[in-house]
Length: 149
Image (cartoon, rainbow, N blue to C red; front, side):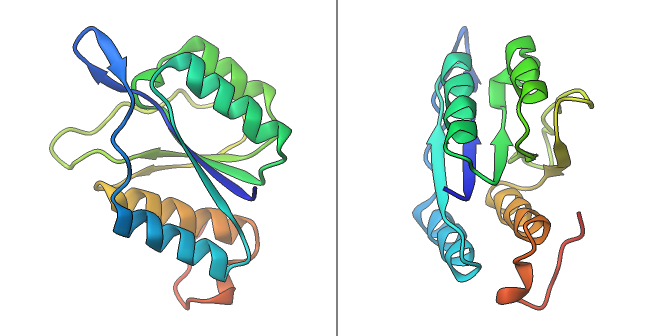
């Protein structure tokens, strides 16, 4: 797997819950863009901190080249922050918040974070993928627009 998208749990009352699936059109566009660049994408939707940690371990073991991480309700998790410090894989922190309610970001210094993307819903994943492909040196395969990292 080249690129892994890890979506953390959403805060919902007292208990976190698994985030809703990315819209089919959005996921299709992300996959198509990655395939055109010669990369693959795996998506992991996590309903708990434990699942986020497990997904990070799997991504590292499978030698993913980069992760797009939406920490969700785990944004302040000391365990997730430590896991990020311990892994060599670069990641881009993604937040799909609306303009009205921006999400908190993780503390700086958590591992090999390349950027933080605060977007509007699916646009944040599109922007983060473009940044990831640029970082991997394969953004020029298809489009003329580049997002600097």
